[in-house]
Length: 407
Image (cartoon, rainbow, N blue to C red; front, side, top):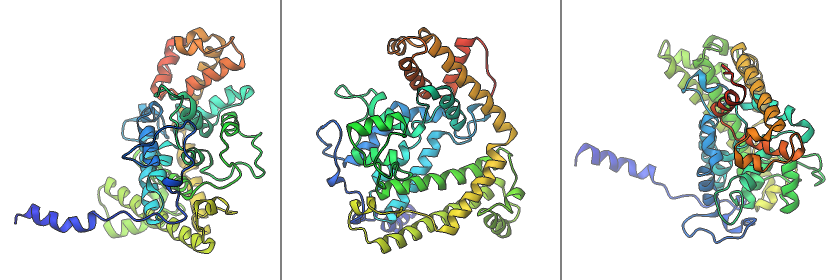
């Protein structure tokens, strides 16, 4: 037997484990509430696997590769984009779901889709588009994600949107928790109110555990990759992290163990340890809450007064403190702020130009508009700008204003 055969023989055991049966409190594919537009289900995939595949093949998902996470594209190709961030969230969500015997595919699709509604230029772009459209209902990226998957994606001849399952739509809308204590959604973003009137998403309840896990996986992913990106971009140094909440002890321990090693390896080890710490805390606390609540079904999960997936209280406080550190040292760094101010100006300019003169839009978008400046035109322009990648927004700004913005 050669070395490769011997190695393969040793690896087959631990690598190829039978999938776990889903827990009673998991979201079970066979009991899904179905799709808004009835259609035959796949013979080879569960309904949530099919949802995942539809997300991956969507136009909005592909555009995430050129949408800002923190750094605009001109900073370099190394840093995270909305797409790479979403992939990291999906990996963490799927891993946690597996340990908790949840539906991994549903956790994955919610993680992959959670940022699809973001504008170009990250939160700065969203703030600018929200301000520009305030008199027309404003802009909310979670609500826009729902609008994308239920209306704006045009891939199928029989319906608009992706026709995702009720559970996926519920998780996208409510991943951060109930939206209405009394079931009244009047103060919520228009796209959520409108769709909920057509197909109620039980806005007053918690979503299933898969959605709760995906939301917390988002926190784990972004604080860790922002540490990674911030260090590599020289926005702060390792010495700055020594006294930072949560990550400081990992910096000290890693330096003590490995000394003066290559920076990339040092950062990788620090981030690896921090991710492990956060995942361990999330799994442990969630298991304790499940044990106390004894949910016998996903309906029991939705009926809980509080989230079942959670960090411990001390860990949650540490995460908040770490986010505050990153806000001060990274998101408000002069280099980042300067780029984002210029980007916000581009978004504001584009909205004003397109809403004032819809003929500047591509013909199919212009045809959907009403009169210049009216609510219908504002809605169309808002959708058009929200769908842009960073570089396309800059190209459109140059086309309309004949000036080039440097970020």
